[in-house]
Image (cartoon, rainbow, N blue to C red):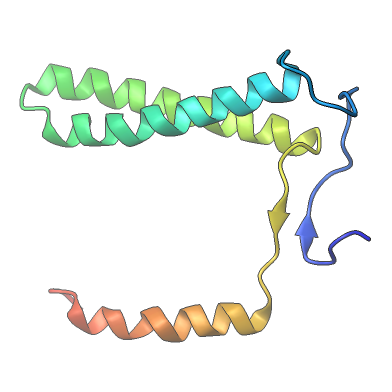
Length: 110
């Protein structure tokens, strides 16, 4: 029975019923997305700590391109039904809002 809170497209493409050791299109895209996520995490640190202006600018460009690549991989996976999201219920949203709304008093600016 499909999950009512699941946000997904119908799966497209032929994927094997039993997964063997060979990588298929979904595996390659999933690997691409995971790699982009890892790269952006590390480039965020590198950009923040770059002391040379041109190095900073070059790494910012690479960071932005890597974020764009991750977004394109995600979009393709979602379009093909290989990436599913879970819709939050209103009660979960309200609880998260209440939990974090009090944190704003800790910010040095208001």
